[in-house]
Image (cartoon, rainbow, N blue to C red; front, side):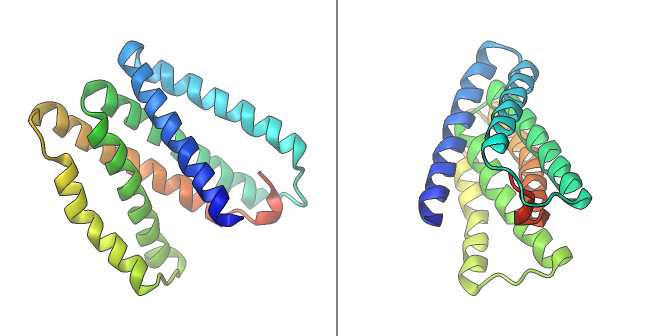
Length: 171
């Protein structure tokens, strides 16, 4: 069941990133980000009414707020990167680096101990980022690279916040 939910989550992230990127080329990226975050909040509130929490503690609310702020920052910079440059640069860089940053923060600050295969995967991201960020439009792709890296910080905050909230706190 976990693998199926992970796959569904990855598909949703991909669709949202792609749609947000396309819309950010038509409308200002800040407007697209704001409306996307409001839509996500409304969906989360609707889902939370269907799946009530067992117990919500104050720290869970703060971790959830930090996660939401990270998500908003990630989408802002991701949409800006796509609006100003290449989607094929900003999106993969934000996703891969966001995961790597969250793992590093977990190791350095929270006591996590990833497996050897997890470390190997993280180490492979460096050449992957270099390969993905190369191309014909250095100016646009450099801006997309910078925005992708800024977005990855938001992704890391989002993941760290979600991981720290207790499962009993619900959605």
